[in-house]
Image 1 (cartoon, protein in one colour):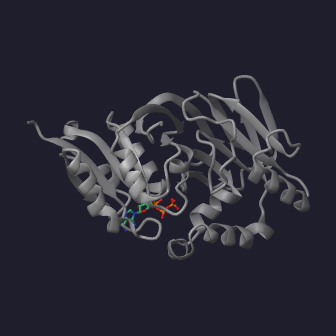
Image 2: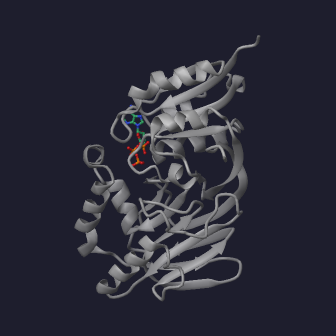
Image 3: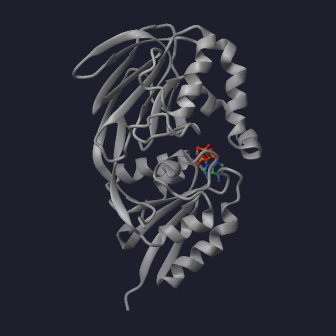
Length: 301
Ligand SMILES: Nc1ncnc2c1ncn2[C@@H]1O[C@H](COP(=O)(O)OP(=O)(O)OP(=O)(O)O)[C@@H](O)[C@H]1O
């Protein structure tokens, strides 16, 4: 009988660093299903692209990544750039794991491993911003600074609370963004606190940020918070938590397959973020690539 292979990359320092404790279970589950597991332990950002050098990936029936959204993003970028069309399964081993949450993955690692072993696949959309791919979100402004400035040590110890603590510290320094947002249908110029362009439904632990978004609808959802008195922001965030913010006066919500976003204030550098990692410089040209990536999703009952 021919040998069957799967490939697992894992980021040993993602989240609370506990994934290495689950390696043996992963190997057990897949070996019991007749697969030989090839392993790769990442040690730096470069590894996500170097890993495929001199490796015949065509032997793998699936590629798995255990890590946070940053690891998933790095791997998706390298797989698409190298035209690797092999099903990708994600194990939520990071701090936030928004991507796994959006696709309905359980958060218990053993359950995830069992559900991934069914190898149920579906094509999902991927976002492209300038020359970088994203699976979940691209954004700019306050919250993007938080996700990048939150210390890894703090994240590992405190998990998602660390993001919120960092956010509260930064609130008094809120910098307004003067943006020009264009789609084929409209051009809007206004002042915003931040913007996000979503492929998935939730980010930063806010699970209903883009309640209408689906990862296979061929569209991106842009959500931006317009400048308003600071006391009104608490109303905005309460609505975002409940997922009923889309039609609120201080929110701009547009669905489209293309966006361009320009920073109209030359002297100010807008920090952008894709899937929790540093994004490209403004201006941003965003588009959705419909059903670009074959993902392993939790089996439907
Ligand atoms: N062995 C390693 N040691 C240190 N850093 C690593 C290692 N392997 C990968 N990385 C780095 O980890 C980063 C990605 O972390 P990832 O997003 O997966 O986890 P996280 O930050 O804990 O989770 P989240 O994104 O959910 O907050 C990448 O920037 C990558 O360079």
